[in-house]
Image 1 (cartoon, each protein chain N blue to C red):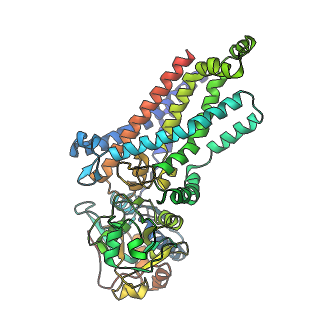
Image 2 (tube, rainbow over the protein chains, first blue to last red; image 1 turned 120 degrees about the vertical axis):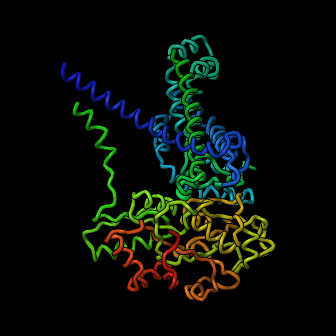
Length: 280
Length: 268
């Protein structure tokens, strides 16, 4: 009884601490961002297309860059990821090995992929397009490699939730494997796959290291896939060490951080809503 | 109840301020090799003092020394007027910079005018300069990095680097990107030159220590160590070592030059 009470207290303390640390982080972010918005009108920040401190602080170059690389990564990773998940859950040959491979791929540090991209992918894209190769295109490719394991592993989980009796029943009724897949398995797992996609999107959105190396970090609205641009995260990381603390240049980075947090929260909310909808 | 009181405290409030036996230095990555070498020399004379050198950038160093998180802030940029009052800047080294190109770019020297045309984004390919049909890829540092400020001040007459250029967070990353990208041009500390990139002469003058000393090579910045107005004995001893004559051979070996005589403390 006594032990129970102590355990409850320890857990409560841990929970309070966790919430306090997270809340403190958000509060700090919001506080610096508030200082920024007291100097720069919110409308000029949210609708601004030009980033040229101290004259102009426009969000759109970074928001555009972040959304572009994220959608690019999802577009590139969706079909290979889904196909891999279907192959593995369908009991294909070497499925276990493939799954292990996905887990290993998911564990490769971002910075390693970034340097790989710098040495291999950029020169290749550069020679193909007659540019330096830096830009949202390269970032999208490297992010696709990074989110593919996340997406595929979550999609496997969603597909595994489909009760095998449904599959067997459909097969017993004479449906072809393709029909079972399209008519039974995918519709039932779809909500889970969608939330897997959204979680992969939030991972792509938050990824910094690999993107920073290849995206070019040019604070301009993306003008093409192979022209330098910047994302919210890559810009924060690039400027962080250099902007004098307490100046609008540094506070603007907190405002960008707040936007990023907002996007991540929207993503988390969407993913949770879909999952609970599917799970019932 | 005891657990409740102890748990948060133990992990999060073990801050340690500047103490007598610990010398913390942070700031400009351009000055890190210098601080590390001085720390090694210092350790031989004062084995009881542990010196910690970390990077972060000039303004991180300035902020941290101003907020008393570290004892010395390294900076190759001067603090904005009115920011960080009460700091004293001690010139420790002239940091020479070089323009570097990808080895494929057949350019040995650039004039001031060409440099301005390239970094302002007006020249988009190398045709008019080297006759090559390669795109110019400008690679550089963040908009408030010390290196970039030096470039804009010394070579672009205060003009700004084109925002479309590739921006990377460190000299090492700039060097790697220039080495890997055909048509790339960037800038870095002379101490970071290696065979993967090619240094370009400025107006026919290649980088050399004597060219900087004679005033023929203009691409350099002043590295300063910032402290509070009356630093403690350990900080003073460290500054004396790094600014002393005996340390100069080491300073030159690392690619820096001793500060010009007569320049004492910088912005306060």
